[in-house]
Length: 580
Image (cartoon, rainbow, N blue to C red; front, side):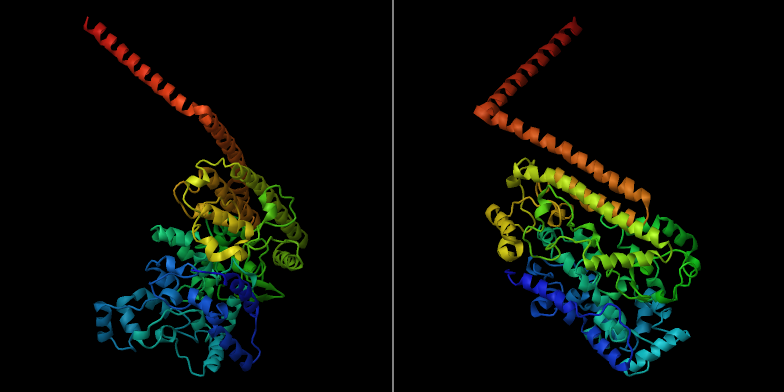
């Protein structure tokens, strides 16, 4: 499949996405109607042309995958729930037919009390079931009724899933946007910042080449974690179905099931920090029904939550967009401002594929503004001087981490330049999709140097470091990647991220013992491994010179035979002496 238009599409899309407002408050019914129209066009705006729709939003069931490599694999059946707009398949079979005969289309609750009682219990406790359960929700419900032009005694199954079981569908943000347009638009505005964000979770999952490579090698189920964690373009990632409680979505646990672990240990670093411990000890007594904009630090919350810090848009406003203040972009993009000695000085190597097509400028006007927003957020609980010094320390810490990565990258660059990897690159399986990447993307997107490397080697190229180099923790081929490449991938993508998140969230042990200390140890491991690899190649070259390898083999065989004979003679002598 040719993807020569990919760059233009991906570069044009942010221009369209940038039309979205970050934090919007409707002032009139006309504005609210306009917001509703935009919200219900969620996927049309997110994927604004036929190619992108064909990749991500046109429902193909389970017949093929998603993204530019959709024809290389078929999704596992569970993906119909993780990515319903793309893969959902309506129920069928005898059991389902019997249910439709037994219950009328209006008997949703009666049927599901029998089939899925947990769903029903959650719904009965939800605001959807009791839209006027208190004055605050009664007022919001009245606004929604004006917006949709009908009375809402309750929001039932058919409002979200459709009235016809033959056309049953899973709700999407476009569905939610009919009644909740402001929240949906705020969520959509994440795309302005580019990846990483939530609404492009599916794209970020299936575009990297290791995902389809593992699937075509026969390991699609092994990517369960990737699928479920990247199913983030839906409202129920934070407001769990079928309760959809705002109060639930305001608690840190709403974030923690995904934001944890190897590459983004947010749950661990926040949860084990002083802030996290205060929350664990006192959080049960806080008023989670209160909107974030009404929270008084020290009174309502004695310590901040994930949402209180990350949803803050400045000037007292909060929105369903936690990425607007992001500066370090998960710590995976090399920053400018470092005198790189390794190939990182040439990053992004001519590549034009977002998010790999730029170096990060931490001190650009936009990022300086975002840093100031963080200082303002932290100053709600700390002194402004402390907040500013802490923010500056985080930036300085990250620059130090990238200096270490430069040192590590230089070690791997040297091995690659001298073909000192064990196993050599030419004796390995290809880089993921290495056999088709060059023809599929072309030099315009890959960059001339990267394109030629793939083209001339048949896809057997070492790709080390940000961002394609992290395939080492997602994909395994025969002899690819090697041990030293895995050491590097684990160091910069895992250990360095523990260091980053530990500092960002104030968890000192993770910042050091599971972060910085591991990075330092990783570099020393790389240096030791590199020395061993260099010695190994010299030994191979020495043995190969002038037939020494074959001579050594003959000598080794003779020595082995003599040793066996001597051992046999000794055993024979011992037995003889024993008999006598």
